[in-house]
Length: 150
Image (cartoon, rainbow, N blue to C red; front, side):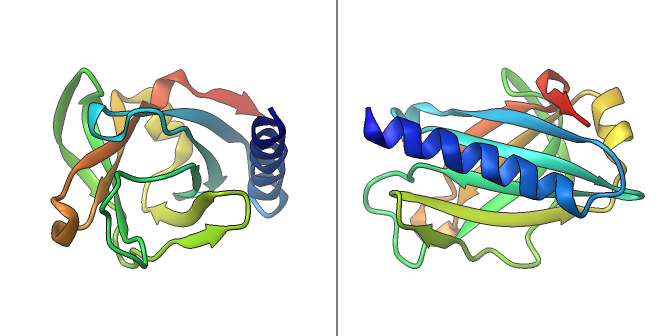
């Protein structure tokens, strides 16, 4: 029970931090773990930065056997999690993560597309392990399902 309270506090802090420097609104998305990452939880805050969107991720874990330091890739695909389409934006200029004291990982990415365009389109967000760890999709979220925060 103590871990869930700590995770909740971190998610709230991350979403507020995502809003602090943004030029507009932000959206919180719950990441859904795939079958290859069952039992893990994740959250991402999308922040409007004009013509680009910033993504701040928190995940509780990755599949066992993933090599450390954990390297994760993030993609915005056309379509949704149930029927993914082609990659619209790859956000992988850096792939490092930062381990958190509360048994999780954080990382940030950005995409050269306005948040409003992402919300108006049919897109999904995918988190994938590095090729050395099998290029496994471990989380997904449909972007249109986000909850706006102003």
